[in-house]
Image (cartoon, rainbow, N blue to C red):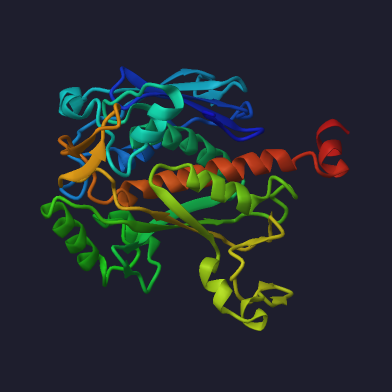
Length: 357
């Protein structure tokens, strides 16, 4: 499937080394001011080649809106956006066109479809996530009108974990780090892996504030379940935690329960979600990225004839994909919460009466 969401749907298209990538965002209410500079600024956060800590592929990632916007506002019809690829080097992949790269989707795509686009991974490439950022930027504009904001930062790199959450610092950090005290160590770990022709994993912390009580559709479209699906759908993500996450399994009920006062919850182990429905507290998600599978070390593999062979990569790759993944996590959270907000509109008669009464 290439479509995400129910009321607010994002359909993406394109390949890493194709002519262009793009998306169609459907379900945006008419009358939303579409800030094109903001959309571009979000793409600029994700675009490659900004520092030695990222892939050397340099793309402008300039977005062009094709439909659904008139005189600066949404028309209520599908919003189509396109980003043209301008810096492909497909020849870097010719030596592995018949070889499966360890850790990549090459193997499964080939066996599922009987063919694969070997140029940078084709459709399975993280290049596609630029379209999600474009769609997520519009979702953020919607949520801003509702007083909901989303932000993120890298809380762990190569096992080096943050002790504080400084989201303002993360905006200026080379590694989008939440903890200024350990950011140099995280940066050093990434550069060391790069110099060793290797890669490291990382964890992104994403939060949404201002989320009202009641978003989430029990039992089979829960807010936490969809957030997990949204994050797991991002390339290289292998685990997702909501709130206390895995650590909650080490706590007693008396420790994990969030006690309640008249002014709200005393703690937030639940990550802002109870029973799959937002409880009014901040929504907190941790997204775990594996080490980038594209490394420049010789690895054992097989080719399309199932003959054993050594795989030696060329090309340009991120030594830690979690860095640029942070803004993608924000985009997927924005799309999820905006979708839930639209779904929640008709849950009470008073909501319908306010429109039609």
